[in-house]
Length: 151
Image 1 (cartoon, helix red, strand yellow):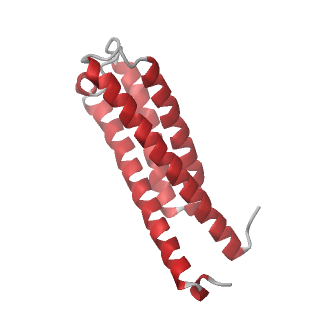
Image 2 (cartoon, rainbow, N blue to C red; image 1 turned 45 degrees about the vertical axis):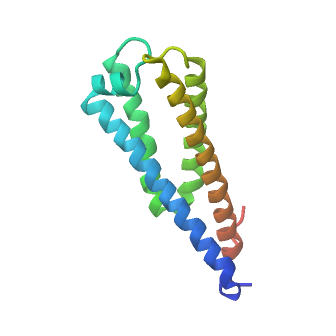
């Protein structure tokens, strides 16, 4: 049956797509914004957001490239639906690993509260990304069912 035969289902699918798009926009802006901050003002980034260990401008530049790549992938996924699941899955994995790293070093930040804040904010973001990934998987399965292009 077509989506038009079930207007409520089509409406829910549209809302899920809008939520997915909004999530990708936020993820792209977050990653590209942080990457830009790290490149333009690495010491300010270090003192305000990443006060772990010793300052190293080169490693902050390296880290900026990862964020820029994920942000660019999210931007492409806004136009190419086939990119959404892979980009969100990789982003979720990256955030999960980043969260674990912050848990390991939770007491190493200065001031100490930033270690806890970073860990919990990363954890919440990881969970939100996992949810968006599941949402994208569902949308992908719906598209495949409608077009008959399942694997």
